[in-house]
Image 1 (spheres, rainbow over the protein chains, first blue to last red):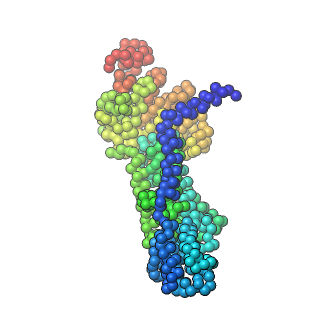
Image 2: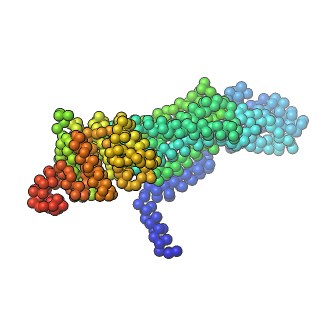
Image 3: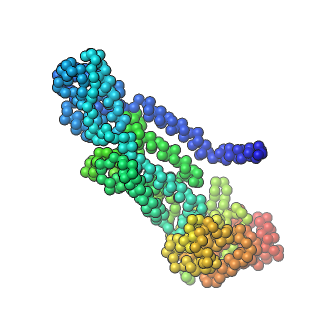
Length: 365
Length: 238
């Protein structure tokens, strides 16, 4: 073991990085960007979940609960009629509502049991949790007024339900995610290899048109991506038994669109990297922010305002929402929300195909 | 075709990379069926000149015409074979698959066998390129460049890192193709290869120093050896 030889290697590595400004920027810049994003996401005073309060009770305790909830900082509660609440729950405008029956005050006073119905939209576990917590906290105030009462809410789920586990919620999003990211990385690296081994130079000197290169790449990798999508989907549904009430063909269609978008995003972004090493660096820049902001783990509706705007620009947000729409809510193509999701993903596909073809620089007379 | 007197017609081409002029007003013509040698040291501008012939370099001034057409033009590219300095091949494909791929790009898969036989790789056609020796890869790369039987073959230092025996074989093939009517532009910094060209262009610092047959260049410089001629012409202000 020679210290000077070890030192030579150490030194060489540091010398290499000194010249690679892009990697240095990434090494020291990306962690701050990602952590700042995460910090802002979690502590940035994001929006709280919206809920409704349907108070049918004529007595004093119903309005006490309603006003406690209205002043709550963990939810944004507003009073509404039962029909209104049900409609807004279905449209996704509110994440849940609490129904206080007409005999609420009497029940509490006579039986010392509080059993209001809490209706939850159910497709976002984080939101459901917040609402249940806020409702139970509002009853703490009630207990102070009415003396010791037992709080046993009846929870009704519009989608999903108590049998849902974490995988059921996140499975839908991850089915698309896995395909999107793997296909993106593989395409970007393959395209850079073409550049590195000199064959791209050869292709550029041939009568190939750039659209032919992009289209050929797209079809080749799409074949692989579709097989992968089918495999991921089959494994999720048949082996993991991820909850699905929707049409499997629709899930596959959305996944296929995501795969095509990923192929073309890979081609497009590989134009901005010179080596495969640099392509891998797109992962923390392109992939991690999308994972945080696409509503996979943190619901978009509770993000701080500026981040919500950003999320609404990211195509992955729509893809994730689309998959949840299909698998958890059983949406089909007649649903306007799914039409929007599919439309955005399709539009993004077309955008990256065009971007890839134009960036593949080539002067044609 | 008689309407195309020159295979290559380069007129006053200038190309700069930053401050550095890679081509500084180069004018040269390559006749049909001729083997034209671009001779010059590393960094003289040979590769840039060849790349400008296939439209990969856009000249800042001057014109480039190939086979009678102003470049770049896709129809003309289909009639050019381009062998890059590095053996640009797909390492995971077999020799035959590589040649077949480039044949398909040019719409001429019928030439695969001829091309592989010409470079003596027909017996090794099923070998994956990553398992081939350096010399074999060079030959495979050459086969990819001529699978579509191009009218003009551009060879960028095709014999770098090739042993003397193979070099002789390759040159025999270039001569044979030229005899069949193919125009060939070949760059090199090896002087003894220059003797095999019909005409030479001596290039340095992006300028064409002299042009002509080997004998003409020797006479012009007033020396007996091509190497000396090159040195002498480089010194004198062109």
